[in-house]
Length: 395
Image (cartoon, rainbow, N blue to C red; front, side, top):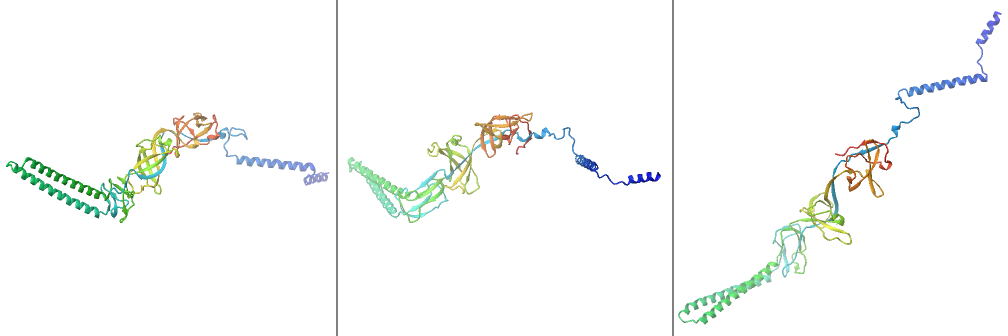
């Protein structure tokens, strides 16, 4: 009996694994449970350093759904109202100079374009050989007339001495007096003729009517000139220049005499300060433009006939200034979005003013202390909750 029991126990001890269908299912179940436990442990270790939350698994943070927007407080800015214009450079007062006398052959030209001249300075001379001889002849006639007048005066003086002795009658005295007066008159006529000829000869010289800068010269030695020869020289009075700025009718109404302007000739970076000294009283019916004349001091870069641009300062005022992206428009009404104290979006209608590279001036609707949404206004609606981020103002 002992052998039997011992044999049975040993057989059970070394029995083969259960390969039945039920045994396989149990083993697979054990594998699945172990794999699930490993996944849970790995997940726990991976999330072990994350910040715990009070929200249930799978729930999202409501604050993460609030959009962030950039806002600015525009404050009050000095808005310069400027007008851009184009036009040409010209002499402020141009003096055309031609032949004032009878003309003739030009013998010398004494100045050229770019020369500064004084009032009355000779610019060119005309041949006067014939006129000089005429003047000499008249001068001789003056001397003859003066000699006759001197002789007539002497005869009259002698006759007066003989009247008291009875040798000369009063009638003779009257006759000699008349002779003397006629001789004196002939002297005056001769002198007047000489003076006229000398004046004519003086007009043969082409002279500057006033001090200034010679702009053009259209005459050469040997050229025959006359009163019909046209303009021989052009002189800018005092060298003063101007820009003739073409402006729209609406812009002209905003300007006045004395308004400052900055002129930049084409082809150079030089800028010249000036001011408006005359505004056109006539508007071109075709272009609806007028001329604003900007006075400028002489400079070599200011060449009459050249093209230039001008920036005219029409005035300034204080107003909030916003970027164009902040201003929305709907139905002809401009508006902006502002963020109130509860960080909610509020629509505010505004009136816009000057628009420039710096931004849009707000003429009404804002005092500058509001937090204005800079951009993304098209994606917002009044009442939306936002996270405002204040944009620093440029210094």
